Length: 227
Image (cartoon, rainbow, N blue to C red; front, side, top):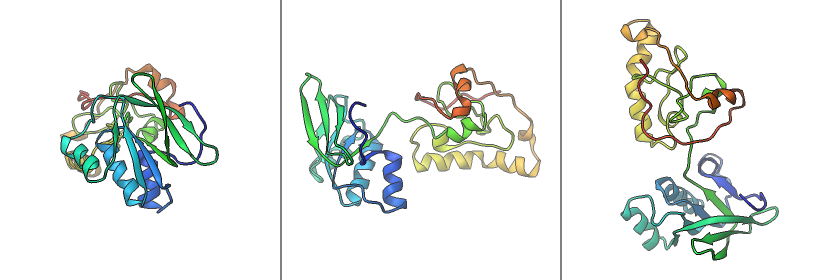
Protein backbone atom coordinates (compact mmCIF):
# COMPACT_ATOMS: atom_id res chain seq x y z
CA UNK A 1 0.00 0.00 0.00
CA UNK A 2 1.63 3.30 -1.08
CA UNK A 3 2.04 6.11 1.41
CA UNK A 4 3.16 6.44 5.00
CA UNK A 5 2.43 4.09 7.87
CA UNK A 6 0.86 6.40 10.44
CA UNK A 7 -1.20 5.45 13.47
CA UNK A 8 -4.84 4.80 12.71
CA UNK A 9 -4.45 1.97 10.19
CA UNK A 10 -6.24 -1.18 11.38
CA UNK A 11 -7.27 -4.62 10.30
CA UNK A 12 -10.68 -5.83 11.41
CA UNK A 13 -9.19 -7.97 14.17
CA UNK A 14 -7.06 -5.11 15.49
CA UNK A 15 -10.10 -2.84 15.54
CA UNK A 16 -12.21 -5.37 17.43
CA UNK A 17 -9.50 -5.93 20.04
CA UNK A 18 -8.83 -2.22 20.47
CA UNK A 19 -12.50 -1.39 21.03
CA UNK A 20 -13.97 -4.42 22.76
CA UNK A 21 -11.00 -5.74 24.75
CA UNK A 22 -8.98 -2.64 25.57
CA UNK A 23 -11.40 0.27 25.16
CA UNK A 24 -8.81 2.16 23.15
CA UNK A 25 -9.31 5.35 21.18
CA UNK A 26 -9.74 4.61 17.46
CA UNK A 27 -10.19 8.11 16.06
CA UNK A 28 -13.17 10.21 15.06
CA UNK A 29 -13.54 9.73 11.29
CA UNK A 30 -13.06 6.29 9.73
CA UNK A 31 -12.96 4.86 6.21
CA UNK A 32 -13.87 1.19 5.87
CA UNK A 33 -12.18 -0.66 3.00
CA UNK A 34 -14.49 -3.46 1.91
CA UNK A 35 -18.23 -4.03 1.67
CA UNK A 36 -18.63 -7.58 2.96
CA UNK A 37 -20.49 -8.75 6.04
CA UNK A 38 -17.37 -8.29 8.16
CA UNK A 39 -16.94 -4.78 6.73
CA UNK A 40 -20.38 -3.74 7.95
CA UNK A 41 -19.62 -5.30 11.33
CA UNK A 42 -16.43 -3.21 11.47
CA UNK A 43 -18.48 -0.11 10.67
CA UNK A 44 -20.72 -0.94 13.61
CA UNK A 45 -17.69 -1.29 15.87
CA UNK A 46 -16.41 2.12 14.75
CA UNK A 47 -19.75 3.71 15.54
CA UNK A 48 -19.89 1.92 18.91
CA UNK A 49 -16.52 3.54 19.71
CA UNK A 50 -18.03 6.98 19.06
CA UNK A 51 -16.48 7.60 15.64
CA UNK A 52 -18.14 8.46 12.34
CA UNK A 53 -17.86 6.23 9.27
CA UNK A 54 -16.93 8.68 6.53
CA UNK A 55 -17.33 6.14 3.75
CA UNK A 56 -17.12 2.49 2.82
CA UNK A 57 -15.46 1.54 -0.43
CA UNK A 58 -15.17 -1.56 -2.58
CA UNK A 59 -13.55 -2.41 -5.89
CA UNK A 60 -16.69 -4.32 -6.84
CA UNK A 61 -19.86 -3.03 -8.50
CA UNK A 62 -22.04 -3.66 -5.44
CA UNK A 63 -21.69 -4.60 -1.76
CA UNK A 64 -21.03 -8.26 -0.93
CA UNK A 65 -23.68 -8.45 1.75
CA UNK A 66 -27.45 -8.68 2.06
CA UNK A 67 -29.29 -5.81 0.37
CA UNK A 68 -31.11 -5.00 3.61
CA UNK A 69 -27.86 -4.61 5.50
CA UNK A 70 -26.36 -2.33 2.88
CA UNK A 71 -29.54 -0.25 2.79
CA UNK A 72 -29.54 0.07 6.59
CA UNK A 73 -26.01 1.46 6.57
CA UNK A 74 -26.86 3.91 3.81
CA UNK A 75 -30.29 5.07 5.01
CA UNK A 76 -30.19 4.78 8.80
CA UNK A 77 -26.54 5.64 9.35
CA UNK A 78 -25.95 7.81 6.30
CA UNK A 79 -22.83 5.91 5.27
CA UNK A 80 -21.90 6.39 1.61
CA UNK A 81 -20.66 3.37 -0.35
CA UNK A 82 -18.11 4.04 -3.09
CA UNK A 83 -18.12 1.22 -5.63
CA UNK A 84 -15.42 0.48 -8.23
CA UNK A 85 -13.04 2.30 -5.87
CA UNK A 86 -9.68 1.32 -4.38
CA UNK A 87 -7.20 2.83 -1.94
CA UNK A 88 -4.36 4.52 -3.81
CA UNK A 89 -2.40 6.01 -0.91
CA UNK A 90 -2.40 6.51 2.85
CA UNK A 91 -1.70 10.09 3.92
CA UNK A 92 -0.34 11.62 7.10
CA UNK A 93 2.63 11.54 9.44
CA UNK A 94 2.29 10.43 13.03
CA UNK A 95 -1.47 10.01 12.63
CA UNK A 96 -3.47 9.21 9.50
CA UNK A 97 -4.89 12.37 7.95
CA UNK A 98 -6.63 10.96 4.91
CA UNK A 99 -6.95 8.26 2.28
CA UNK A 100 -6.46 8.89 -1.41
CA UNK A 101 -8.86 6.74 -3.40
CA UNK A 102 -8.94 5.91 -7.10
CA UNK A 103 -12.15 5.40 -9.05
CA UNK A 104 -12.54 3.06 -12.01
CA UNK A 105 -12.23 5.92 -14.51
CA UNK A 106 -8.86 6.93 -13.03
CA UNK A 107 -10.08 9.94 -11.05
CA UNK A 108 -8.65 10.28 -7.56
CA UNK A 109 -9.99 11.99 -4.46
CA UNK A 110 -8.89 12.41 -0.84
CA UNK A 111 -11.16 11.34 2.00
CA UNK A 112 -10.12 13.18 5.19
CA UNK A 113 -10.03 10.69 8.07
CA UNK A 114 -7.92 9.65 11.02
CA UNK A 115 -8.72 5.92 10.87
CA UNK A 116 -8.88 3.36 8.08
CA UNK A 117 -9.96 -0.25 8.55
CA UNK A 118 -9.01 -2.88 5.99
CA UNK A 119 -11.53 -5.72 5.87
CA UNK A 120 -11.98 -8.81 3.70
CA UNK A 121 -9.45 -10.98 1.81
CA UNK A 122 -8.76 -12.92 4.98
CA UNK A 123 -6.63 -15.99 5.57
CA UNK A 124 -7.31 -18.46 8.40
CA UNK A 125 -5.88 -17.71 11.85
CA UNK A 126 -3.29 -20.39 11.21
CA UNK A 127 -0.02 -18.96 12.49
CA UNK A 128 0.16 -21.19 15.57
CA UNK A 129 -0.73 -24.27 13.50
CA UNK A 130 1.97 -23.47 10.97
CA UNK A 131 4.58 -22.85 13.64
CA UNK A 132 3.63 -26.14 15.28
CA UNK A 133 4.33 -27.97 12.02
CA UNK A 134 0.77 -29.17 11.37
CA UNK A 135 0.01 -30.22 7.81
CA UNK A 136 -1.64 -27.36 5.94
CA UNK A 137 -4.40 -27.75 3.38
CA UNK A 138 -3.20 -26.00 0.19
CA UNK A 139 -6.72 -24.94 -0.78
CA UNK A 140 -7.76 -23.29 2.47
CA UNK A 141 -4.34 -22.49 3.99
CA UNK A 142 -5.74 -23.78 7.26
CA UNK A 143 -4.74 -27.04 8.97
CA UNK A 144 -5.57 -30.21 7.05
CA UNK A 145 -8.29 -32.08 8.93
CA UNK A 146 -10.27 -35.27 8.59
CA UNK A 147 -14.01 -35.69 8.92
CA UNK A 148 -13.89 -35.20 12.68
CA UNK A 149 -11.71 -32.05 12.39
CA UNK A 150 -8.67 -33.95 13.68
CA UNK A 151 -5.36 -32.43 12.49
CA UNK A 152 -2.14 -34.21 11.59
CA UNK A 153 -0.97 -34.11 15.22
CA UNK A 154 -2.64 -36.53 17.65
CA UNK A 155 -4.86 -34.76 20.14
CA UNK A 156 -5.02 -31.49 18.17
CA UNK A 157 -8.31 -30.51 16.55
CA UNK A 158 -9.16 -27.42 14.52
CA UNK A 159 -12.40 -25.48 14.09
CA UNK A 160 -13.89 -22.15 13.09
CA UNK A 161 -11.62 -19.40 11.81
CA UNK A 162 -8.58 -21.63 12.21
CA UNK A 163 -9.88 -23.63 9.24
CA UNK A 164 -11.41 -20.86 7.15
CA UNK A 165 -11.12 -17.08 7.25
CA UNK A 166 -13.65 -14.99 9.17
CA UNK A 167 -16.04 -17.74 10.17
CA UNK A 168 -19.07 -16.68 12.17
CA UNK A 169 -19.42 -17.55 15.84
CA UNK A 170 -22.29 -19.88 14.95
CA UNK A 171 -20.15 -21.81 12.47
CA UNK A 172 -17.29 -22.06 14.96
CA UNK A 173 -19.70 -23.40 17.58
CA UNK A 174 -21.05 -26.01 15.15
CA UNK A 175 -17.50 -27.07 14.31
CA UNK A 176 -16.72 -27.52 17.99
CA UNK A 177 -19.87 -29.56 18.56
CA UNK A 178 -19.03 -31.69 15.53
CA UNK A 179 -15.52 -32.44 16.84
CA UNK A 180 -16.64 -33.07 20.43
CA UNK A 181 -17.15 -36.83 20.10
CA UNK A 182 -13.69 -37.34 18.59
CA UNK A 183 -12.13 -35.14 21.29
CA UNK A 184 -13.84 -37.25 23.97
CA UNK A 185 -12.63 -40.44 22.30
CA UNK A 186 -9.08 -39.12 22.33
CA UNK A 187 -9.24 -38.08 25.97
CA UNK A 188 -10.73 -41.38 27.15
CA UNK A 189 -8.81 -43.61 24.73
CA UNK A 190 -12.01 -45.28 23.57
CA UNK A 191 -13.83 -45.65 20.28
CA UNK A 192 -12.75 -46.48 16.77
CA UNK A 193 -12.10 -42.84 15.98
CA UNK A 194 -8.88 -42.93 17.98
CA UNK A 195 -7.04 -44.81 15.25
CA UNK A 196 -4.19 -42.83 13.67
CA UNK A 197 -4.55 -41.10 10.33
CA UNK A 198 -2.04 -39.94 7.78
CA UNK A 199 -2.16 -36.36 6.58
CA UNK A 200 -0.28 -35.07 3.59
CA UNK A 201 0.13 -31.38 2.77
CA UNK A 202 0.85 -30.99 -0.93
CA UNK A 203 1.58 -27.26 -0.78
CA UNK A 204 5.37 -27.08 -0.86
CA UNK A 205 5.31 -23.33 -0.35
CA UNK A 206 3.54 -23.86 2.95
CA UNK A 207 6.35 -26.09 4.19
CA UNK A 208 9.00 -23.73 2.88
CA UNK A 209 7.90 -20.94 5.19
CA UNK A 210 6.52 -23.11 7.99
CA UNK A 211 8.96 -21.87 10.60
CA UNK A 212 8.33 -18.21 9.86
CA UNK A 213 4.57 -18.28 10.26
CA UNK A 214 4.14 -16.37 7.03
CA UNK A 215 2.10 -17.11 3.94
CA UNK A 216 -0.85 -15.71 2.09
CA UNK A 217 -3.84 -16.88 0.16
CA UNK A 218 -7.49 -17.55 0.69
CA UNK A 219 -9.49 -20.72 0.33
CA UNK A 220 -13.10 -21.57 -0.23
CA UNK A 221 -15.16 -24.46 1.00
CA UNK A 222 -14.45 -27.05 3.65
CA UNK A 223 -11.22 -29.02 3.32
CA UNK A 224 -11.70 -32.53 1.96
CA UNK A 225 -11.73 -35.36 4.45
CA UNK A 226 -8.34 -37.04 4.65
CA UNK A 227 -8.56 -40.85 4.73
